[in-house]
Image (cartoon, helix red, strand yellow):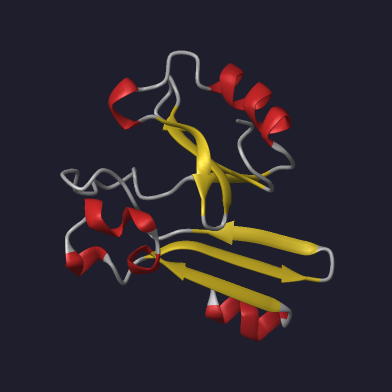
Length: 125
């Protein structure tokens, strides 16, 4: 991400796992991983992440990437997530919830594709 930032300018925000409430769920050696990198330069905007998964799961070739979708509010994301997550892997599913950087959901769909969603705002009470 720093390379893209150097090439395109703009703003880069990096959030490490160790700086989030989730850090206690993972071993300290994973705390330096970037859980969210957000880049914006003019109309160009994208996000990325180091591979993150359950603390007991180790990466395998082919499962170290994700489609990262930036959306609007909770209701907009929930409608999309509910459709895409039909048949998702139950053991690796995180429903839409709030994190320090926004509303968040992730899952592996029925085809094994890893989806990560980040939205603005707060989950309705």
